[in-house]
Image 1 (cartoon, helix red, strand yellow):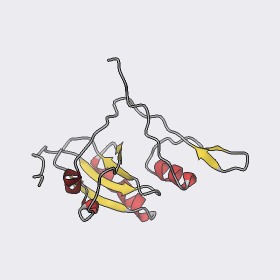
Image 2: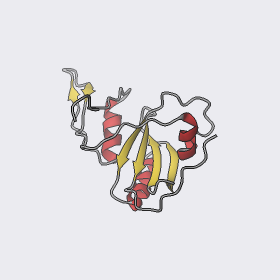
Image 3: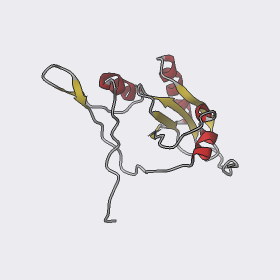
Length: 146
């Protein structure tokens, strides 16, 4: 279908090497950063698979699927980068590995109402990263939204 297509998500990072290491830990094929003549990293990328989607959720709804945001007064503008994993067990394993390495966990793994295993961690700059299994569990109705 002709028309605009989401082409990239660009993260502005305070520590590019730390961000590259974080996303590599998640299994993303981040390329080696391009470096200035002084050796400072300035850009790194990774290919994105076809079929990625852009989604938008209300703040009250986001508070239901990420307990780490339950007490925050303002969520407008938060971004969640979604990482699709191969299994429910991989969500649990990777969440444990990433949080053990010192990264903040916003939502421990749980069986979400949409039928997937889901967790949320933060990258070194505080960007939320959702870890999601295939939807192979029972699908329930969405939780009530106030």
